[in-house]
Length: 493
Image (cartoon, rainbow, N blue to C red; front, side, top):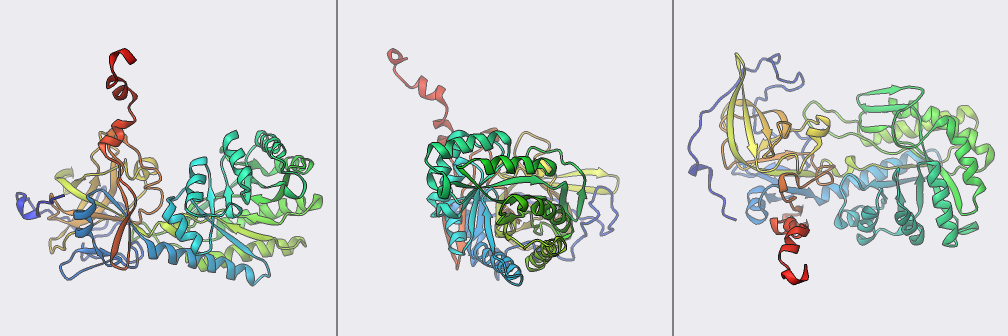
């Protein structure tokens, strides 16, 4: 692909805005940077930096080279960062539990980002894998995950998915409803899994604690589709214990996503240990799975809690609650996803148009339109998620200008980065890089407006390789049965 240099585009007006922090329509957390080329360290992969020409590099690979070889939009994933985070998270929880004489198992939450290569990376670093559908299970297996080190989630697992999981001998299945208790028991019995070979299960419960970023809410009830209320759990467990084809190994809960701090986990632990102590009267409960949800930095305003501090705080909280009730501390399990893969991802876009829009008497916003959008990152449209951005193909000494990076789709909500300061001379042909896109961007990608999904390229030690092929228009047309039908001879129709 030939990329026209920026010099071939017509020059544009350079705009800037005042540095006053209280300008209208500018988020309170977003300050005007002294240098709009700087990379905020906590947001980018540690391997990210600029070369002598000012071009962004990730793991020693120039983004200019990546555009030339693979085009844009492009998901870029730093393999060494994923591996390093997997090792660090595993060590944090294993060290925290070892101090209390118990063991930890860390599952990689596949919903964050799943491909066979990523499965290979995390399993080689000692993690188990958590899946929620038959498709995710197939990818985990193809990536080399061993069935005993796979956990299966989901609030509406199909009969076929449950049969496949039981046939494979997955390590555990998290039960989410009374219907599933009976359904899974019948499947396991039909497949001869009784007695010592009974299928290991956990039940998912709602502790009434919901945490997001800095805050958490503790209530008596939680209105959501997942799990059982605490008050209903004893009856569900009693039924499971009556069934010879199921073996209850533990209790699972998950309190939210993008969580900073340990307060929500501590509150949830108090309620979960109450249930654990009650359930132990009828038999062993070997594992408490406390889920994941550990946050990362998306912008300069985010200060995520170090994973070691989270691990120590969570494990210590469970230990205190167990000691207070006079019950033994069980083994613990955790399911991080975003905190392993999120920071490792950078998405590259090419700028197509830049439009200055007067949004207040004294404020102009640059609308920077790129060649991707909500089809490759749905999170801003779904959740109002905030991201950062930088010009990646060069540096500029232009004054910072308030910008909104938007996509190419026919939706006013097609926003990639809601508010950011970019150099005021951002122009057509520039490469824009959005960091912290390793989690939930590829996973939530779509073909909205019949846009093919981008490829995923892994970078490591100065080399780049495709780990998920990008789609083409031909790929999309190949699924259209009407096109196939019209191509057949008339007598066959």
